Length: 506
Image (cartoon, rainbow, N blue to C red; front, side, top):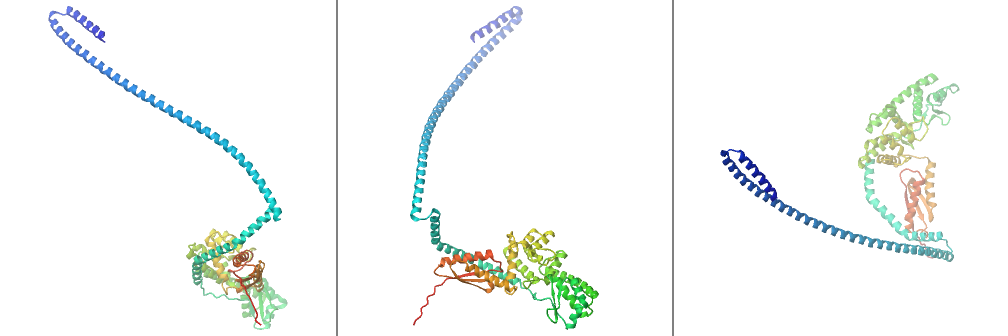
């Protein structure tokens, strides 16, 4: 650095000398002055440059020191990381060795366990064989004996639990169910009186019967052809019986014959005229009755042909119960239950109103349930209403709360006392079937059906069946009745077990 300044000074001095030789005397002073100023400036510049160089050297030394310290720290951390890594590797090696040793031990133990298990199985087979030889029982027979013994011990517990469950269900459900049903039946009170009629016509005299028959039977043949009804004139003196599976046809024939008798002109032409007029009158009556039924139940906007079908309920009886009376009663019960249970009221209303519409469809074959459901489905009725009709006799499993309500309302209306009458032979058969189901059970001494088949009392041998067995027997009989028999309402099963001791004093 000093040599640099020396060369710089020499060059500057040489230039000044050359300038002095060339400059005139007057300028020499000015030149000397500038030279002095340049010397001062150069000296200051040299001093500043030296200061800057010293500062740069000091900063470089400081930076170098910091860098060396940082490098030392990094080398130290690297060494520590290397040591920790080495320790971890050593620890993993130790653990891997321990795991390998443990696996070997487990493998040895498993082999030993399998050998012992095989030995135990062999011993078990030998012991079972010895037990079978000693007890003279096979394994299945012994198993059955044990299960029978356990079942015998648990009978009392099962009976106790059944009683507890029944009591709990009764306490929580019976009161509310009674309130709902009583209220529903109270709302279902109707002024309609079901008339049990037969299609018979009283004649004023025997001469009228001859006129109705006509010459060579032409009048009676015309009546039968025009109405589609069989006329029985020979069975009972003084009256004529009308026979037809279609109640509407039978009503048309009855009204037409009454009009002919009142008119007195009985001849084929007049018969056809009266029958045709009567058909039109009955059709009007059917439509009026259907509208009346719908309006009483709050149902509107049904197609006219469906209203006319509902009007046929006026002349249709089921087990002696008039269909209009039954439909009014059932719908009111169903709607009341729907209000209490939060079901869709309109679905229940339509389901109850239309549930038996298949009974008045006489031009097709099939059960009234299927005929009614098919008719409603073809006419675009809501699926829930169709389901209520399809399920109201449990032909299909219940798909909604509304279907259950329609089923319950139908059962209440049909099973209440005085609602229906049944064929005597069917009645006796049901009672006999009830008693036979009970008598087929082991330990039953006798069985009696009461209350028109709504109650079954079963008397058991006290020596063969205990109190717990009585509970189980009642449950079993109930299940068989539900599975095998069809009956209105419900059947109460009562099992009676008693011990009687009789002594005679002489």
